[in-house]
Image (cartoon, rainbow, N blue to C red; front, side, top):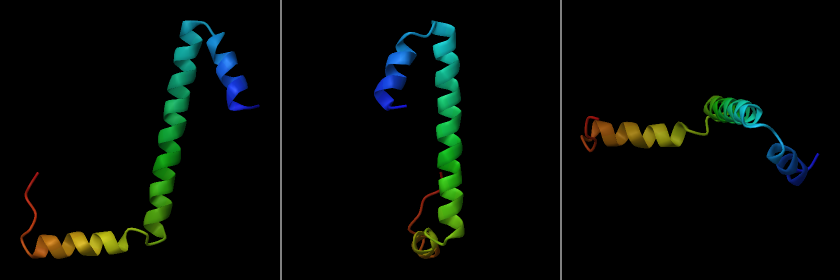
Length: 65
């Protein structure tokens, strides 16, 4: 099914079903995002960034939130 077909079908849904679909897609999107972040973390893709942040913290270049 193409995105265009899904869009056309979504336009035909009653409001309550469209709301349910949007909620499910929102949850699905955030689950995919969380999984990608975890995967990147485990692969070490944030290591250089964490090192840079730690260095700035150690130098006193950060502010408390």
